[in-house]
Length: 205
Image (tube, rainbow, N blue to C red):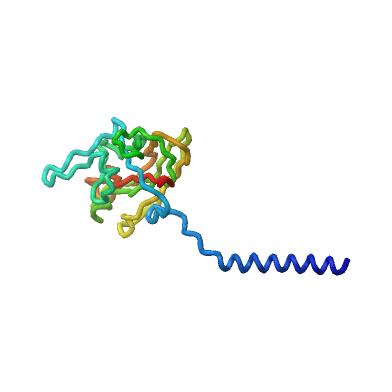
């Protein structure tokens, strides 16, 4: 009996040592995907439709710069969509559809893994400070809604994207509802909500 007990204890100790050694030799797993490092994820081309009540701010008559909804999905941080309401667009909806197979139809079902927003007009620090930005957003996908409150950032961090909570279920469309906003810091533009980019990722190839 004594030998059996000693053997069992020795076996357990050996197993523990083996686990510890194996753990120390195990390669580190890659970090979880983030908006600024979407390792292992693939972006999906998307198209956006804005609620009729939101509109698009008129193009600049001097520079010709436009503020159309398509700027949300062009992947260019120097462009932005700016809404055209008298307030900051709260309660308005943005609806995204997807073209995962690149056939131009934007009628594909995807399982979104990560959705990221570049919040505000980030082309220049003065534009970022002047225009309103998202504060709280509801994301509906697969019949489920997740609410995200975005961090308040200074112009020194304006290019960093923020993740939005969502249900990772198959869907043909994702709807973003503007729940709350933060006003800009310049009186003339304080009520003009601007968003530079929205990007969807899947874990597919």
